[in-house]
Length: 101
Ligand code: FES
Image (cartoon, rainbow, N blue to C red; front, top):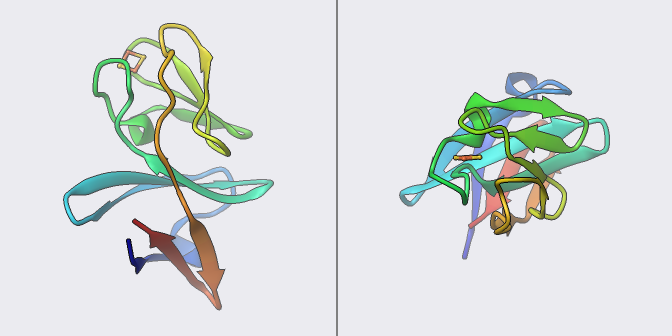
């Protein structure tokens, strides 16, 4: 595990999400009104990208079947998702967003 700069603050305004790739891992970063979070971008139900879905507050809705996850802890909140998505440490350094993966 190591820290990687993945984006600048201006690329991910509040309410937005962005897919980044670190060592072949597809990771979603989210800018919620509670701060930044990062999870695997791959839905645990059937492998859609969560960043192609919708972010409402701290809940991301998968575009494929409408399952949902809490981005703060990766826990599923709506069927058919029952397996959590992996979460990753994320932090701001000046105007840069860094993820540990
Ligand atoms: Fe995400 Fe089915 S692939 S809910």
